[in-house]
Each structure stands twice: as structure tokens, then as C-alpha cells.
Image 1 (cartoon, rainbow, N blue to C red):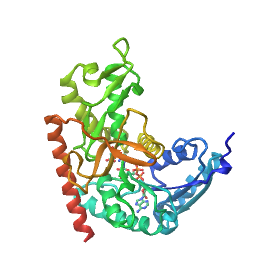
Image 2 (cartoon, rainbow, N blue to C red; image 1 turned 30 degrees about the vertical axis):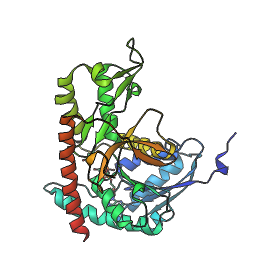
Image 3 (spheres, helix red, strand yellow; image 1 turned 90 degrees about the vertical axis):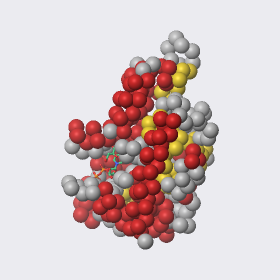
Image 4 (tube, protein in one colour; image 1 turned 135 degrees about the vertical axis):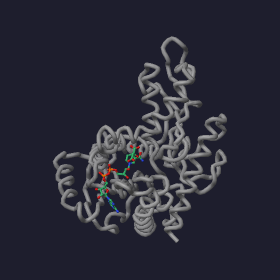
Length: 339
Ligand code: NAD
Ligand code: LMR
């Protein structure tokens, strides 16, 4: 039998650790859902000084869970202590948009946070650190951190669009009437914003009852009008719809998506399957190089690679162009604050 004592613990930083996503996420990590049942973890938890007491309470609760895989917890409001020697950085903490605040103002405060965190990654983190940015605007925050961590490879940086993928796959499963596990390879292109492009054209339904082993999603749904006019805006607006209902943004579902993203990145995607991750564009699909853009990827040995050669139809291409334009504008604004 394998004992956890013989395995070196993995150091995982969660920022925004006193916030609501972290309140689901860290319990999933400590219970083994992210790295498997034999991999011990050391949690580094960072929040800002005014949240220090709340953070202490979260640490007490983690202790009270008696998780065998939780080697230790470092809870801090000091950036260096948080980032030192970490193997995985999950950057959740960000400045939320307040009433009357323009997108540009939001970008400005977040650029200052992710500039500091990019510099901290560069100085203190393990050279192989895998970075996942969740705090919004996630793609551009990831780009800011990447630019400031110039000694680390850009392929170490990513932003979360897995929640959008999960939302899309769940809606398709409900429409077709199959278990969500049968819905594979739905793609999210571009920005984690309302311009994101949910694309079912390369997806399939596995073991669709009585119709052979695999069927394209479009065939199973058999309702192009629904796919184009309802499904796409439903996925694009799901985050806002949850906020309207809960008066808080998605938290447990975001944590669940983070676990899926990091697990697949480190442990690998399944054969024949791809997942969506926002990663540093290399020019694939004519997306300009140097944007953090959501692509379909496969992962092996801790490295992602963009799925090549998919044929993009003209209506999807138009939407990809729009999300690209938004990301270029965000990048320009963010970089103007950096210089
Ligand atoms: P929250 O407000 O409950 O928690 C955020 C925490 O971050 C707070 O405790 C805050 O003090 C902390 N924080 C702020 N600045 C920090 C800094 N510089 N260093 C460390 N901690 C800092 O928010 P939440 O619901 O947990 O959401 C966090 C972020 O995730 C938001 O930006 C939200 O929009 C985003 N989000 C993204 C996705 C996605 O799919 N990409 C999904 C849901 C939410
Ligand atoms: C989500 O997709 O649920 C969030 O990004 C929404 C938000 O604005 O926090």
C-alpha cells in the first residue's frame, strides 16, 4: 500500500483565501480532489490584512476537518511568505467591481494586484509553478502576472474558463437527456466574459442510447435554432444570472471548475478528450500571439497543447473575432497602466 508520508507535499497557494470561492476550494484541495488520494498538500493562504481574522477562522475549520492529506497550512497577509517555493498558484483574490465602477477602473486596480503577484511569482515561486488566475478580468489579470514574471515560461500561466465549459456541457446534457459525463469536447474560445464563444461543433455525445457509440452534439440536439439563439447566450450570461439570483457570484461551481482545470493540467486529460483553458496564444487559429485566450487543449506530463486543425465555421469565427478584439483592448488598457 502507498503511504502519504513517503510523498513530498505539493505547495499550493490560494489567494483571496478568506473569500467565498476559497471557502469551497481549499476543502476540496485538502481532501484530495485536486491531486488525488496519495498526494499530501501544504496550503499557502493569502488575503489582505483586513481579512486576517476571517482567515484565522478558515484555518481553524481546515484543522477541524482532520484531513490526512493536509500536511500544514501557512496563512498570511504577507506576499513573500505566501509565494515562497509554491508549486501551484491559484490566484482567486481580486478587486470586485463596485456600483458605478467602469471596466477601466476595475482593470486599473486589478493590474496593480496582479503586477505585484507576477513579481512575487518571479522572485519566490518554484520555477515550475503552475499558475491559474480566477479573479476577474481573469484573462487579462493572468497576462499582467505573466508579463511581470519574465523569468518564468509563459506556458506556466492560465486563466479559468472551465466553469464556462462545465456550464455548457451541463446545459447540453439536460437538452439531450443524457448524463453530463456523456457530453464531451464542448469548447469555450476567448475571454471569460460575455464575449466568450461556446462552440459545440466539435463536441460529441458518448454512448447515446440506441444510436451507436458516438454522435455529434448537433445531431443529438437536433435544434440549431436553440443552439444558436438560446444556448450560446445562456452560457455567456450564466455568471450574471447566478449573481442576479444569489446576489453573490458563483462560488462552489467555480471551485469545482478550478479543481478540474488544475487536475487535468497536472495529471493529464483523458484520451480523445480536450478541455478549455485560457492560455498564452502562440498564433493558433489566427488568434494574435501574446493574448491569454481560451482554447481547446490536451494535457500530458504537466504541459498543455492547443488542439490543432479544427475547422471553424463563419458564425463561430465572427464571434471569435469579437472576443479577440475585446481581449486586445483589455490588454492595451492593462499595459498602459503597467508602463
Ligand atoms: P470574494 O470577494 O468572496 O473573495 C475575494 C477575496 O480576495 C476577499 O477575501 C479579498 O479580501 C481578497 N483579496 C482582494 N485583494 C487581494 C489581494 N491583493 N491579495 C489577496 N487577496 C485579496 O470573491 P469570490 O466570490 O471568491 O471571487 C473571487 C474572484 O473570482 C472575483 O474576481 C470573481 O469575479 C472571480 N470569479 C471568476 C470566475 C471564473 O470562472 N474565472 C468564476 C467566479 C468568480
Ligand atoms: C462567473 O462566471 O460566474 C463570474 O466570473 C461572474 C463574475 O462576474 O464574478
